[in-house]
Length: 109
Image (cartoon, rainbow, N blue to C red):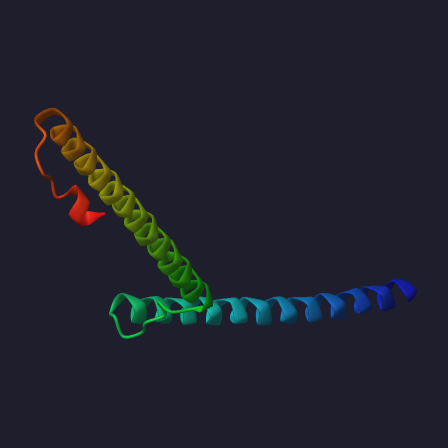
């Protein structure tokens, strides 16, 4: 008698477990269907999820990097310009020293 009651208890628990497993499988299938539908919308261009929090932060970082690159390039150009001006002035001073002519160096300084 006790064995029968134990088997009935195990049987009912097994039935409940099978029902829970079935519900989990249905839920998983529903999630897969939704994912497929979203993928189809993305592939057809109907749905656009290109802007998210991570994308905004990444865009800001890219903008900061671009600004830094521009600043570096401007600094390099300024230094190049300054060195070219110094080189021109030195060559004019050299010309004046050798040939004793009047130069535009004094006009710039």
